Image (cartoon, rainbow, N blue to C red; front, side, top):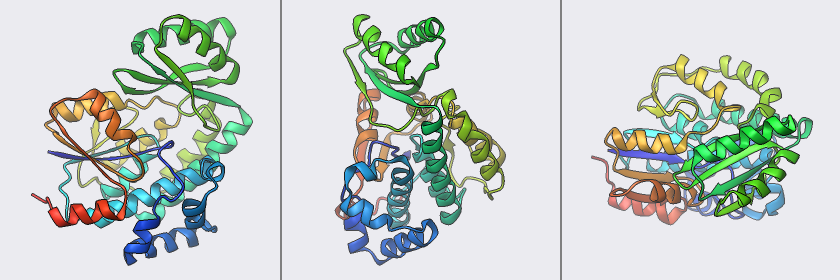
Length: 311
């Protein structure tokens, strides 16, 4: 069985999508459609940067979605898919690839999500950090202790692999957690360049407005199961997908559990559709005896089309 995976924030890079748009008229058309809907030149930000601009969540999220959606369209007829999942923002790309959302509807939600998360980050400033080489339960325990001591928000936001979790919370709490986690034996603790405490209660100001927009958007039954970030369970029904997507903003991303559930369900080939190689790395560190590949550039798409591995 084959799973399509879609990356989230942190996978963007200056020059992303450019080769696809130059090579495939279909990609050029999609980007044009996206720019009309967004009201700004997304292509220029993706192709030319600067990186600081592309890194702003209000631009990063539409950029990642459009890139991944284009790749999904270009390989749809050439690559088997039995299940899909996306990391955080990537869940929206996965919903598009599974036929749950129309392109324009998904992009509207993604653009709104980016704006709301940016605003929430301004309203309730937060930070995030990756913690490597410490068991998740130990990180959870230390975060809970420190949160209680300080009276601040501090939670585990992503369960990425057996070796890596991400913490999220108020700036002071995350800064103190860096010291405490290092002292407690974490191999590495790396602050992340993000504009808010994503997947934590600090995103609550964004949740209600996004929830309303999600409820007002037409969701269809998924053509293949989509493994939800919040539940790590395969969903196909529109109502269940909407509820899980609303929960996603303030709940942890259970990526490790998603990969384990997919593997238990028979998935042995994983393709990352979109920019970068982050998810390929997480699969590699989580599962053995599986095939892992990425489809990011025009060359990658050409290779998949040449092999045309539809079963």
